[in-house]
Length: 199
Image: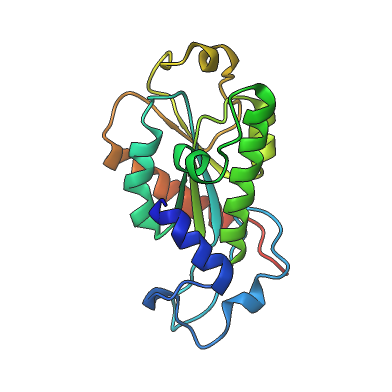
């Protein structure tokens, strides 16, 4: 089973990740009860340190470089990574690529990410998410559109893909994965700070 899928099972059962950067005198789970959407900030203090929970969607045509970007970005954020191919192989084997199944895949990907953010962590999902309907099913998120190719390798996906009207970072042909990971990281942190804080 994919490492991150095993990891999220541990997060869902324990409600917290056992790493030094998460340790705090207070229980972060007490502050998660009223959080309903991605990007809301959860703050616990250890001196002057704080941490955030958020949901990132890296979307675009097949072969555009979504997974490559995710693999560079995830370690920077200490995030949990959900790759669509791994989720399909391990959890969603019954789903195909009809519009209905794509919608259900997006909903399940969003649900997995929401469980991670509710536990106080950052979740990164990389998948095509080709239509406004699938993006709505995935739920509120920081959106990175990987727009590096004109067509993907699957004709049916090319036909249904609708470029997003709303996104936070648009990845173009210029620049390395490291460059765009740094750009996405910086913009994501600013986005989190601008989100309304839970009362």
